[in-house]
Length: 83
Image 1 (cartoon, rainbow, N blue to C red):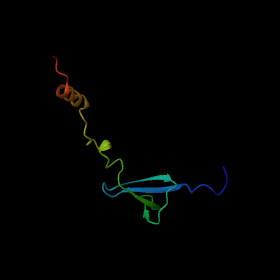
Image 2: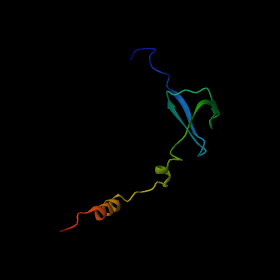
Image 3: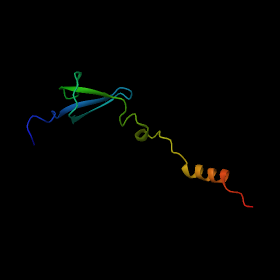
Image 4: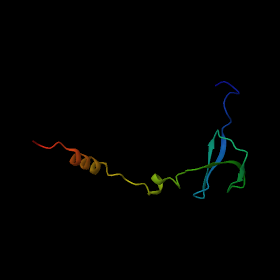
């Protein structure tokens, strides 16, 4: 790898304020905001709008569409009539 062309890769806290959820991971993202984590160290914090705590797919509140029923209704409604 070429030196001095890659962004710094280090620990960052991602925080979902709507779900009151945060997790520590490694990333190249940076922030001027910091937060004191559970281990007593200070890390940069990045606020996100959706995380696994607030996304409908992960929380189980996602709506399942009945595509088979929709197709059948369409075929009944617009089917050719026999002569």
